[in-house]
Length: 393
Image (cartoon, rainbow, N blue to C red; front, side, top):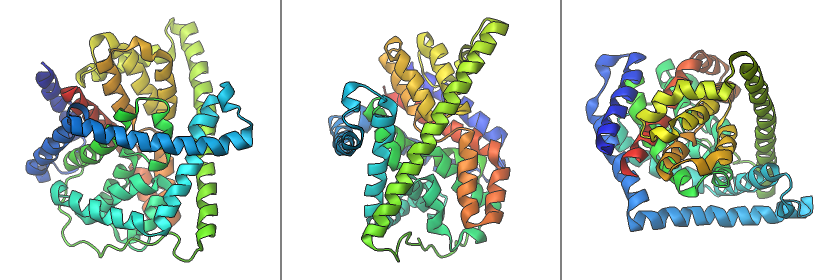
């Protein structure tokens, strides 16, 4: 039954991708099938095998330890407010981003991250048919984050074609930053965060192979720029601490704004239509929720949260999910959780385009023109990863 549902999901997702494809004649099915097989195998391994569950548990345990260290710094500054249950989101979800950002800076400073990007990116390029530049970018987006990622390509970014810029921007929007993974794990089950991070890398190239197929041809020389090569260790620490703080404050501001806006829209729609804004979105997204394998009993609530993520961001959606987690079946909760772990929302258009514009203004303008297509493609990536999890759960 799950297999038939998964095949239906593939037909719908692939159909939605092909509709907006730049060049359908260049679609190479071999790479799509290859990526799907690998993705399904990884999902089954991580969620059903003892070895995979141990890997997921270890990874989640590592972040649990890191969150504990971060809590010590937070408690020192805010006087154990978190232990009293005060300002939970700010203290337990947002403040740890500062510590995780600092750790990423340390790994970058000692050249560990560039090494990981090259190794994993090279392996990924062997199976996705997209070339090393695109593969490196997928890995560096995950490790460095949306904002800093494109600095690593500042030497060659201006030379890239619009089609390749779409691919690079789409991979940045379809993944998440390691600096906020701990925050996600405090709101949804850690194992689904780990699975989503890995599956999204493969789902991204599946969808891009349909929407934006091309043959890389002769690639420019790949040189990842060192982000802090002229800084001392403590200068770098200060920069990453402040970078983490800025991310936390930006997320806090977005949460305040979007949650207030959704509350106002709920009140307005309830007064006019008798249905809240989120209930209405739930009906709109119900078919997609059901198609990716979420049980009918959960699909309406899931559709509402999926739409909330698209129009606001994943943090708002995860907080909404926390309120009604008990109402979901384990299967529905797992599939929905995987869908939520990505930057696929309208706010990300400005973030990605702005980050690229900071390195190359013309290329930033090119990416900004892709806005809707970027969100559309990144949402299909989330749907595919969720559908794969629906197959193996």
